[in-house]
Length: 193
Length: 78
Length: 267
Image (cartoon, rainbow over all chains, first blue to last red; front, side, top):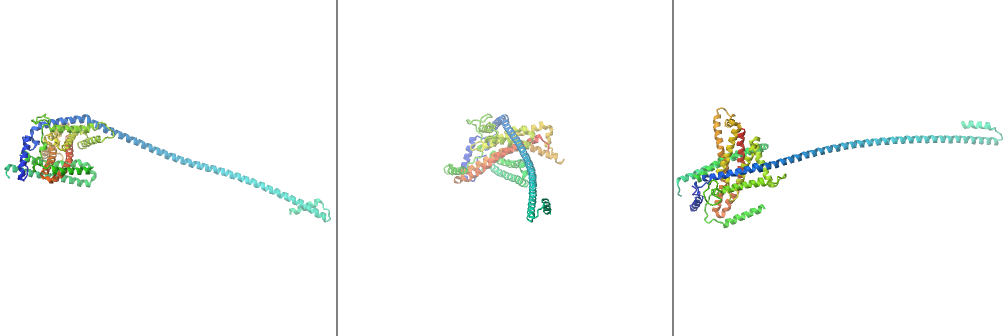
């Protein structure tokens, strides 16, 4: 019986007993104390529990769970899509990078080629110019040589003339009339020697 | 201190039954402690075994709850 | 915010201790009164259809479940709101449990197990509200829940495996001499399952609530020093919040374990 609490305090025990009696009277309990064991209430609880479970089951299996499953599947799909898209974009980025590298390499080789070509061209030009300049120089040198030779020849000529005339003068002043031919021959001999 | 001897027996019995709660506490502590010891040795396997941990705790605790129930029955229902 | 709430609570406790002294201080502890079933209207007898506080709190549980799982997910958002997120994690939690523990072929029982889990969780948590009634603290309710599981498991076991389901009791890995003994033990443990399954839930919930009430009785008796049991109540209440969830989890996971036995009875 629940008509007592485990109190050693006798003064308060009476109040507690009264209160417990009141509670028991209020509950009109067949088995005082544990409402869990009032078998009269069992059909009521079982009935309402069944109603509750059936309602929850119907709500869950008809509405809630398919909806959540759909949302989750949709999100899964979206995520998978996004992932695929990201993968695709990544592939694209990789391809772009490859293309970029390829282009870079191409450009580099092209630049090399152009540089080499230009260099060769310049070299060729240079060579041609040098050859031309050489030729010009050679021509000029030849010309100069010719001019020098001419000058020399004319100088020799002049020397001849001067020597001839000087010799004729000298011969005349010495009182001898020299044969022009003889003088010439003698001068020529001297000058040559 | 008047009362009848049957009531005294009830209360003594309820107190004795409550010892079972302490025994269940030891059992639960044992389960959890061993789980922790194992989990610290191999933390990677611990996560997979939490369900087993709770099942073990539930089994250990159920018996303590039985003794608690016996105590309650003695206190209120007999 | 939390600090302010704490200080406010302490002030209220102090004020209540000072001004709300019981008229006759005494140990008036009625830990079981909170479990009483009374009709919602009037004071008549309780027949099987009478709407009682059981009805009311079960209806509130149903309402909460609908609010969470149906109304909370009504927008079907890809980026979930807070409520939808809770609903989804509850779904994922139970679904993963069924899949991991009971096996992939037990997914057909998922709505049933989800029903049990949601009902127990909400009944337990609603029972923690002050002045509420805890439907799962009644052995009648949990016994029906456990019996449903027991019957489901047994029927499914026999339907799916025929007489091979009896192999559950014949431990083929044990030495032959031990097997009959083990079979008897297994048989007993099989039939004790619904008992422990139901009493574990009801007992845990009932014990926590009763302990809180006992401490509340102490608080009434202690007058000025009522804050001591009130702190104890706070601690027990925190434990109860934990227990409310863990017991629902344990009930569900044991259902899954039993279901696995029914689907794959070989030891």
